[in-house]
Every structure is written in C-alpha cells, then in structure tokens.
Amino acid sequence: GENVEQHPSTLSVQEGDSAVIKCTYSDSASNYFPWYKQELGKRPQLIIDIRSNVGEKKDQRIAVTLNKTAKHFSLHITETQPEDSAVYFCAARIQGTYKYIFGTGTRLKVLA
Amino acid sequence: NAGVTQTPKFRVLKTGQSMTLLCAQDMNHEYMYWYRQDPGMGLRLIHYSVGEGTTAKGEVPDGYNVSRLKKQNFLLGLESAAPSQTSVYFCASSYPDRLKLEQYFGPGTRLTVT
Image 1 (cartoon, rainbow over the protein chains, first blue to last red):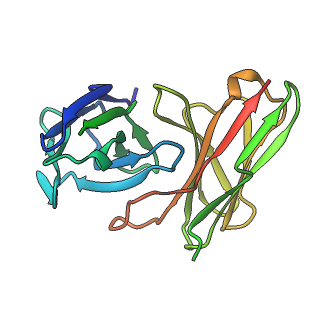
Image 2: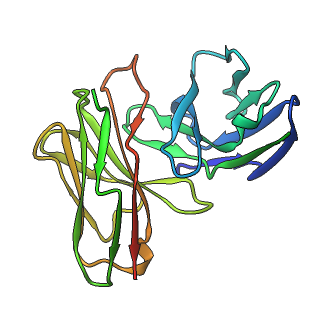
C-alpha cells in the first residue's frame, strides 16, 4: 500500500550544526512532497515543498532534495537555531488523487 | 480571513457518547480533510471531501462519519465514542489546482474519551 517512511524519529544537534531528515515513499505516482514543522500544541505549518519535476529547492537555511529513482526526499536545515526545535513531518501526494500520506515525524532538538 | 478554524478546541467524552467536530474554511477551497494525530504515528487520513455534497473514506474511517453540506464546512461525527478515538484531530483544506497543492491546517481539536 501507500506509505512514507521517515528517519530518524529523533535528532539532536548542536546549535549551528546541520540537520538532515530523510523520507522514502512507496508510490511512484507521487508528485508533490511537502515538509511541515509542528511546534508543541500547534498545527502543522508548511515550511518547504518540492514537486516531482524538480530535484532540489532551497529557501534560506532550509533545502529539500528529491531522488525520484530511489523514491527518496530529504530535508536539510543548516545553521540550526534553538527555534528550529520542533517535530518535522514529510508527506507525499499521490498523483491523480487527493490524498497526502504523512511520515511518522522527526523530533528535532537543537541544543544551545 | 480566518483561514481554517475548528470547534471545539478540547472535549472530554465518556465511552458511548456522540459528538460532532466542525471545520470551517473561508478560502473557497474545494478539498477538505480530517486527520487524526497520535503519538509516533504522524497524521492519518480519516475522511476527505473533494467538493460540496461529496465525501470519501481515508486510511482510518471506522467509527467516524462526515458530511459536507456546505462548501466551507466539513463535519466529523463520532456516533459512539471509544477510548481508541482519543486523539488530536486536524482539519485541512486545499485548492483543486495543480499549481496550488499546499494543505492549510486548522488549529486542532484535542479529544479524550474515558
């Protein structure tokens, strides 16, 4: 069936270091891959997304890469700051449907 | 422009009780979704709607019903609540546009069933 695997489940980094979170999707028809940041008690907020016709996208300290052949996509956060601490979710949208499949989340802790 | 709103924010039910969660959006979105979020399991789709008067089952629909009588509202009903339905429920909406795929989430409803 359709699923998205996300790793690691927890990640601790020192302030200023980089963080990488990886996701793998199963349905090759997936065509849109958003990343969400969720702070405690809050709603998921879109931080960056990428479509299947693009290999990489960057927005300031955040970047996402997509490898369609391997069905992998990754979130890269550089120069991490304490306010980056949150749970991050990846997702994949199945082309031709209205469904988004979410990963199980990564709890990122940035240590000051 | 309030975006996506949900009522109530918190609720405690006893097993067997019923309730309805309301989601409203003012962005004229065609698509609306209900998810539940449990620790370590991410967001799982319960039901979704691609337009007024239409609904479809998602990944975990059992024990829930939905209705979309108006385009801006999507209701999630629990007819006979069970402790397994203790969760945080998020509503989301999006455009039916290939160029605008972002989902917009509501603030969530924390439901406890005792």
